[in-house]
Structures are given as C-alpha cells and as structure tokens.
Length: 629
Image 1 (cartoon, one colour):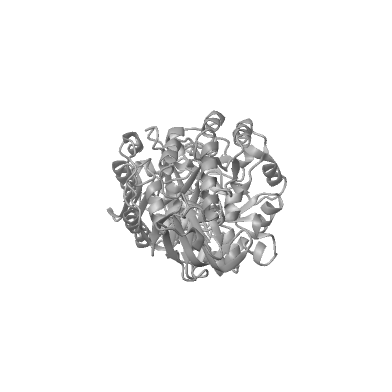
Image 2: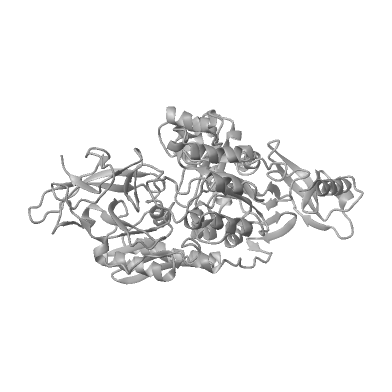
C-alpha cells in the first residue's frame, strides 16, 4: 500500500468513526468476540468502510446513511474470519480457486499456503502460478516460498529444484509472506550453507521462516534447529513436542488434517499444564477434498479443539490473532478492530461452530453455507497439464522384487547399505515357504494410522522362484515408486505393511510427497502396472484397480496434483478412491493421504524414493531385502 493510499484509507475510516461520512455496511447488535482482549462483548455494532472496519462499539447509528447496508446480527457472535496458518492447497486435489470455493462458506477468510508440491514438479514457475491465482481470490491467500525442493537432496530426484537465488527472487513478489516449512532439518542443525542462505534471504526481507522438525529427538539437534531460525513447527505429535517448541520461542502449530490428528495429544500443554495459549496456532496442513466438502476446514478444527477442552475464545484466538501476529499481518487481519479488513463471521453457537454469514474484505461472500460471489475457473497453461511421463508402458515384470543371492548378486542396488539390525521386528504370522530357499530379512515400511511418521519394520521373507512375493496373510504388500518427471522408466520396488489388503488389487497416485513421482501399492503386479498406466493416460490422479477393473478414479491433470473441476465433483471422485481402498480390505482413515506420504524422505522412519529405500533416522539408504544374520 502506498503512502497516499494509506492516508486516504485512514481518513475515510476516521470520518466514518466520527459520523462525518456514512459507512458502507453496519452490523448491529452482535456479541463481539474480541480476541485481542479475550472477551465476549454483547450489544456491539461494527461499521465498515472500503472493506475495512471503521468503528466497533455499542451504537453505530451515527455511521448509518441512506445507502448503508445494515445487517442485523440479532445477538449472534461476531467472530474474526478464521485463518489457516499452515496448509498445502494441492492436498485438497483442487486449484486455489476451488479450495476457496469449498472453505470460504465455512468461515475461512485467510490461508497461509506452502505450494511445495507444485514446486517439486515445475519449480519457480509453478509457485508463480499459485501466487497469481491467490491474488484474485475474495479472501486472503498468502503464499510461503517453498524452501526444500527437493526436500532431501541426494535421497530423491524432483521434477525441478529451488535454491537461495529463487528464494531471494520470490521474497520480492507481492503475495509472498515468508519461507515454507524448512524440512531439511539435518541441513539446518549441521549448518548447511544452502539452507542458511534461504533462511537469510527470508529474514533479511523481514518475513517469517516456517519450520518442520520431524524428529522425536529433542536434544541438541532440536536446539540447533531452533537456533537456525525457523519460527514455527507443525510436525509435533506428542505433548513434549509442543512444550519444547513453545519454550524455545517457536509457535507450536497443532494440526488437524484429514489424516494427521495431532491436536488432542498436544493441546494438553494449555488445558492441563497451563502454558500461555499465545504460543499455539491451529492449522490443517493437509486436507482431502472430501473432508473439505463434507466435514469442513478450520471450522472443523475449531470444533475439535473445543471438544478437547479448550475454551471457545482461546481456540478462536489460536486461528485468528495468534496466526496474524505470527506472520506480521495483525494490522491487517486476525481481529475485529478498526483498520483491519472486515473479515467477520456471524455465528449462533461457538461450540457447535457454524458460520451463518461470512463477510470477507467488507463483502458478504457466503450465507448459510452457500457462496454468493462468482469464482471463475483460473486458466492454467497447457504445459501445466502434461507432467506424467513414464517412458514406456509398464508391465508386471516392472514390479517384480528380485531375491538377492547369498553373495549379494541380484540384490537391489542401494548406496551405503546398512547391516541388518535396525528397525522394529515384526515376525508374527506364518512365513512363506518355497523350494527350500534361504530366508531373508526385509526392511518394510509400516504405516501408522492418522500420523505422518512410519515405522521401520523387519520381517522375515522367503523367496519363491527367485523373487519376494506379497503375503496377504501377514499384511505384506508391495510398494513401488515410479519415476514420472523425466521419462526414465525407473521403478523402485519395496514392501509395505499396514494397509490390510485382502483382495487382489492395486492403487496408484501421483500425489506422492514431496517429489511427486508415482506411488503404487498392491497385491498383484499386473494390476500395479495397470494402475500406473491408467494414471499416465489421465495425466495424473489416484486410481484403484481390483480384479483387473478400475473401481475408483480421480483425475488430477494439473501437475498430476490438482483437478480443474469443481471441489464437490473432485470430492465425489475422490470418494470412489476411498471406497476402492475399502473394497480392497483397507479400513484405515484416509488411507490415500497416508499412502501419499510414503515417499516423504524427511519424516521418519522408513520411506521409498526413486533412488531406493531410505532410513530417515540416519538419512541413508538400506536394501529392501538382505541376508539374515
């Protein structure tokens, strides 16, 4: 905002507050949720001019003119618009526009988004697409510049890369609010010059550095990470994680996404230990389109937080003023007070929170869950719609897992293989037998329901006809990472436990954090190939194949991550994928989001990448199968 514009705007607000000029809008007789003072004040009026709040007090009659829009609150609560402090648009499988269409009627009026998914596919030009689309929305959409593309150099190959030069350039763009989550936490506590340069460019621009410390170790590495500059962290899952972050001056971001349920365990820092709630922010991180359409967004998080024992006003503070202050925009939003944008929700009940009216930037944009403003589709360029390149049509042989010989010949090549011994042993259930061949130990990815981390499991396997096969009886399925950016034809095959598949099936997704190649899981190699080839044809998405038939499909042609259809249509299609998981025997909550993180090589314990199987506790490769000691 220029000096002249600021002066003109403030003079107009002063004139309205003094009664010299009529307001554009007046809300009468509401219960003001004053997050700045922690009070609920009945009988409050709010006057709005040029999209901003001019007056908040007991009687705004002096601001009402002939053309003033008057809204009768009739005793409903006046709540600041809800802010999501950390999230990824792409996880909703929709564009920025369609995400806004889904969440604005529920009371979200501001989002701080990290587009590192599209950045891993298209680099800086992908980020610019998101910034440009964010700028034309009826609510506030701030963009954090992705920091780690790739998230772990040397352990994966993205479609593009970003470094300090790109970060410095983005810090000059309007709409960039800071640096996205700094996922390379070993790089930070080891003083990596590239990571320090990216954080320096952000700090010197006066913007916020986002954090991501995905480790249970709260010793010196954590202290080194905090000293490096990240100002927040959403990767905590335990009470001690939240406490440690707040004590070190970081904001503890507690997330409730579709599959990450980390609020209940950490909020006890406030409800039981009595820590100052100013150090906490509520966010979603990743929300599936079906969750957005059917269950909600920040309103869902708010209801959940209150159910965990938070006072309603405190919970609202954690997604309004706390968030705005953290990102340095509290002079613009985050509270109902003069000078701020008029982002106001009219709500009859704070506990069963449902916004009956949503006002954003001074306009009524939604009422009773229905959007009232037009949101034309954003035109994505043709190059953004063709990003899935497999190199060749895949066959069952591409998903064969060769058994290594005792001498190591035929073993899946991996750099610096570790000796057998790491990981959690899981040998229950019958072991396969066949041909008198020697038994082997397998490093197996173990999924954890409703959490981003995985377990590093050790399971005994016995080759059959020279290969390692699935074992449905022990819930042992195959997982493959298919390279899809450079058409190399590369396929990395591993093993996964925890999906509970009972049928012959395969599921594939190009939403595969963070490099977003293609993940395929299944119990039948031919169907795994069929699923992968289907996504090459649709240019991305998620697909379920059972008994040779496609039973679930959502097409995501924009970068292989997002649909160009309406949010409710995407939600219906995404529901067929979830139904497909269940038809295959999987009863996990949001298993497609759990699956999408199995290649995220910065969250412990075991992940798969295009370069091999990664032990994230040591940031090193391990073989899929190795000889028992």
